[in-house]
Length: 263
Image (cartoon, rainbow, N blue to C red):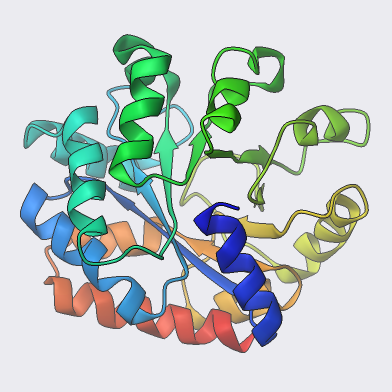
């Protein structure tokens, strides 16, 4: 059982929904980023998605693109991202960390080396947005064998014919992308998302977590009420980008977490 599996079992037993946050590793710099990440569990975050900076983030909108650029400009690398996770683990051995990004940096490092390093750093799962199920032998299967969850995205365009393929080697949870398009581009509506979550739930026992377009405590509550939890990324990253202090960022995160946990 991974930390992700254990966290969902714990939330389920307590009748609670999950609150998941995305932050870009190294944004705006290593030390500030680490301070924010260390503070997330205390602000009510159940699972941390740690963004891996990349030069060509095709699924991301301007907010997260800029965060990645700030991190890269500050010298952030895959190695330093794993170091940040390892530094976090020195004080927290229970909060799950999902590394989210693109395949190129992993491929460049070498899959076997990367998986060993990720496991040693305390990473629990991967979301690699540009590796479709047809490429499962490339990273997904080796990751599962190494004890890491491989989390897949489902979207409004994932129809009933495609869904079984998306789910076949997925573990940990399913990340439902509530809107078509890039991160931060539109707002999620529970009325549109609910039927889609129900459709996916009929095909899997995995928790369904909904992300993209959630930017207020009310939205987090509404989305969590029709799913197993909510993910917030761009709204938090934009606070970091605006130069808010870690304390201010974490206060905002706590308001979102309180909303999601009411769901």
